Length: 380
Ligand SMILES: Cc1cc2nc3c(=O)[nH]c(=O)nc-3n(C[C@H](O)[C@H](O)[C@H](O)COP(=O)(O)OP(=O)(O)OC[C@H]3O[C@@H](n4cnc5c(N)ncnc54)[C@H](O)[C@@H]3O)c2cc1C
Image (tube, rainbow, N blue to C red):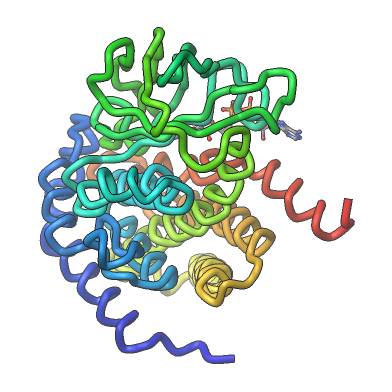
């Protein structure tokens, strides 16, 4: 077992860390307070090859491995989780679904602009009536000549207003439930395809979340992704990879909370000396560090398995479950260590605490991860 990163992995991590410190950290509080979508930063990440780094060179990617991708998401999330979730959902959900299952024709036409970050991708599975039980979706796609006619809506879609290319899931054979769902590629501007306003959220406030609405959207037959009725199975595979990204997001946010806390307890003085001298707080910091390292190891283990082409379903679920719940605790303690100052907006720990909650919800809640893990354990 080798715990050493390769030179390439270290190079990517260090490059993203450097970029995040110089360009992402300044302005993060303002973006969060104003809900400003970080389009400029996305353009810069695109220029650095970080909006589709895991995809093949023929589409403009750098064929980086999943470990490098997870490290990059952690580095971005350390300073701005809103930016990190934008990159992660664009890369692993919308772009990922097309890259994994799309026809050569669709990939040639759309992937290069997605991989370069020129066009942001969104992914629509969730509906108002179907979240954890996504197979209960109501959106339909009916074949009419050379087109699929799509009707319905999707809720909580990341990049809902800023995205330009979307992969959405719809019923193509309602009677077959999950086995009658297919995936389609939609473009912003197709007649009948609209979105609601940006939704106001607890955290990740400068990321973009909105409803998508489809009213008789005519989608060319060629925009069916992969085989008809296999969209649900495709989605489960897409989410498997996505969970590594959410795990890395949790690790990045938690690291922010720990690093800020370490600095704060050494500066803050009470009872005649730095509060870092208080054993109760030292124990708290020690526990935070252990949980952070364990989380990262789980995330990277899932990434290593994915890169080796081995099954990683339960490992990705474990990584997401553990790291998001550990990050919740770490971010909670980060505020405690900062006392009243931690409750104030100008100290980042308050934002970490709000942002990190999404990690227990998005791409399958903690309860759904436990279902996935228990199913593997019990073989039923
Ligand atoms: C900021 C944000 C961004 C998102 N981005 C996207 C996106 O880009 N694309 C997309 O498709 N979706 C997206 N989502 C949706 C997200 O994936 C869903 O919110 C999530 O899967 C949960 O679904 P739900 O909200 O309908 O909750 P529900 O499924 O209604 O769950 C409510 C509660 O019941 C629990 N529960 C449900 N079923 C069970 C069960 N069988 N056993 C035990 N507990 C259960 C859940 O764990 C949860 O605690 C996003 C959500 C948020 C908040």
